[in-house]
Image (cartoon, rainbow, N blue to C red; front, side, top):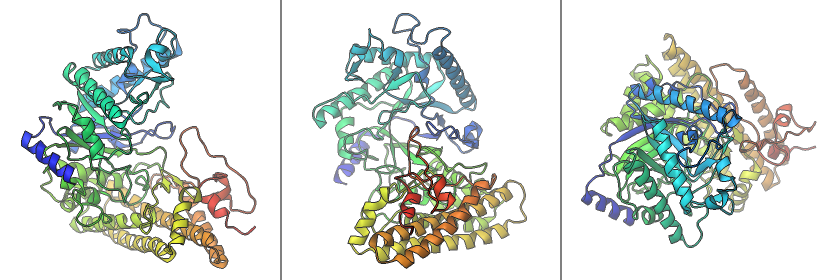
Length: 597
């Protein structure tokens, strides 16, 4: 707190950064997921133009850095040999990005490219003439002169091929090449050894290098992401200042960070890096949270993002985006992820009601310079955008549904009674079990929090009952509408049905695991398993719905691409639990362990 206040005051005394305000949006296509190319209107730049955006950001695997053939830095054409599969890939990939750039810039929006660094072609990194000059212990080494030489050539070639590109968003904490078979890469400090101060110095040198080579020499914008970069975690203001105080600000250099102190969870403090230092900052906000259903059912977060979430301890400052914008002069922008967060489903089919509300609220609130309250923006701008034709009463009903959904989420996907809050129990369309949540359940039992824990899950079900009732009132009110509004109401109804059943499954599984591990509740556990099976039998039919419902979740836990969980067969459990259950992981396996054979 003291550090943040002191640095903010320093920034104000020195004057606001010269950087212009930016409102950016990204549709993230799930890396490594054949179904993950989002079917969304947010792929059409005219959508963001209508909402007042300044630019679009490509998904992580679509980067102009991967279009380089390095003819300006290495001799010959051997990097992507003529007539080879790799050269055919490069040509097709480059054409695709050229089309995206033209489509974006012709609307007046800036084209920003998500860029993982450091990433080079495998043919260069493994070449006998270059491998020792580029790598240390198998990792690309930023400290080596040839690495810097190749990066400078990379940047020059990028913007020669894409002169209309506005800039790049640089990610260094995660490097994904699932869709890029001819490239390899790693973080710029993977080869740095020594003290924390040594690593901080290396980060400062890397960011300064980007500033000089891209911002100063090429006149392009750099958004450098702090996500998953720094030692410890990505929200340390002390670490942030230790690095960035070594880097001179520039009007085309922005530092970008998530609004949360970790990933996009609830029960996660506001990022302590926001509002400190002298560099212009961009705040990242997911509109389709991977840990919270991804828009398959109501889960409204923008009241919490702007005003602070209900679980935030009283007196916390800053607690939300509304506490730093527009009052803090270094906060210069918002970067929304309208679609995509995480890796897999649920997959939204043709209706984006809950995403639309998020996108319209935060973009309009920002563009109005926070002169309108979050509630006013929701009712007067976002609701008509997401539910055209809805009147004031209908928008008030939708707002009440949305606010209730946030509390329901807190008590369903998380466990407020536990100090760790049970993060990561559910991710994307994967439902975890004892392998993910067992230690938290043990703690709840040991600390005599069983009744409180069960009561929180029951509270979520009670709230979902209220949501369902309000939804029917809203649906009846707009039943005379036609076209998009009626389709949205159909999705609203079905998404609430989805949410009710989904919350019921979680509450049932939670009760089985909690009482099953506690012991002495065999009759109650057996009865609850029957309820669990009924809920899943109902839920499994949702996969047959068409455009009016998202794809369903699965009873096995999260896995990365290429790590598909094995199925198993057990004649003593229902078919739905056989079909996708991981033999050692996930909700179904955990519940099956409590069945009486």
